Image 1 (spheres, rainbow, N blue to C red):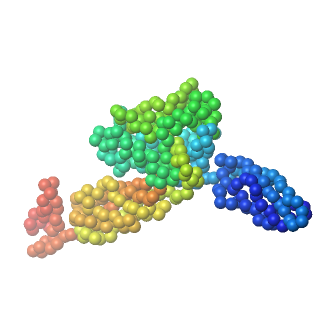
Image 2 (cartoon, one colour):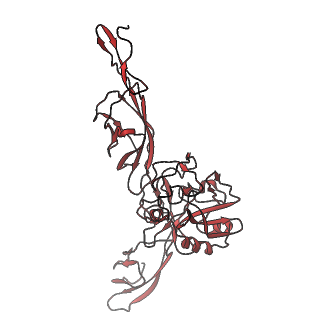
Image 3 (cartoon, rainbow, N blue to C red):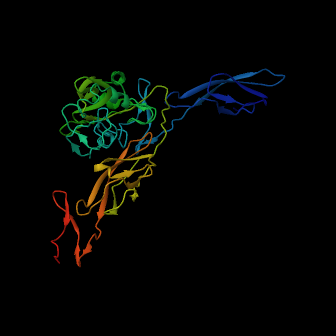
Length: 403
């Protein structure tokens, strides 16, 4: 603070968030300044020295905006404050950018089946399966096509487990740390705050909602001239859940659709949480190939599965018939039990899953090729080898005495 008359003391007698020393240097006190919350601070400064009257002045401090981005599951996000005062992600989960137009395909993001993890099914390039999941954490990266729920009828029929999963704020749901999937009431509060309750109003809001379409149990509907859906955590009976429904002419937050439908998700900050979620490197793992000789004994090392992002757990989720292989949390695959026979099985296709806290798991196909070894032997001057018949019995490969 600039003054005339060489004051000996400076003090702030009104206002908050700042401190001042006796040279007039103003510093931030204990508060964290946030442009989205408060843009201007006004403090009252008093200066004094012996033998003269004190003086008081108003000091205005303007807060400049900083684009506060963070990384989550390989995507970049920033907080955005809506007209309701709540903080949201600035784009749909999986979107590469904030919407620049109502039909901006790069802002549509990923398409989640209700309550399901970010296991790969949400990608537009995911495969499709018609086999229902027997767990709310499927060992599959495929979109599960069904007219009702994506799980079997005996799994979380009321949706409470999946609603709780999508409500997690520790980064182990589908949203960044501090964020979660909104409730129907929170979506409704946003909807009524728009300039108009239709797609134009949704896009004109500070959250820039595009018309992103949805993925039905048959195919994608990404036609931006029609509709958009945004999931809530509210589960309804009969395999349904509630969502925000937006069209060119109207909108509503209490629409219901079957849980197997896939739709975009916009995460909301849990009240009291830090809007700048810590950046966490995404997990990635590529398909890999290994080889091992037939007749290898239990305990034999096969190879180390490589992954990026420092995973803390590795597991084999498919293809490990008879639990013939094992994998540890360093990615080391070993022979667990059984005997390999090249003449019976020449390769194994394993699905390996890697995980760590606060980010989505990743999956990859790991191929283990079985190499043939010469298992012939001599008997009475002739060479023989074992062969396994369709009955599973082992025979000599030729008649006795045959060359």
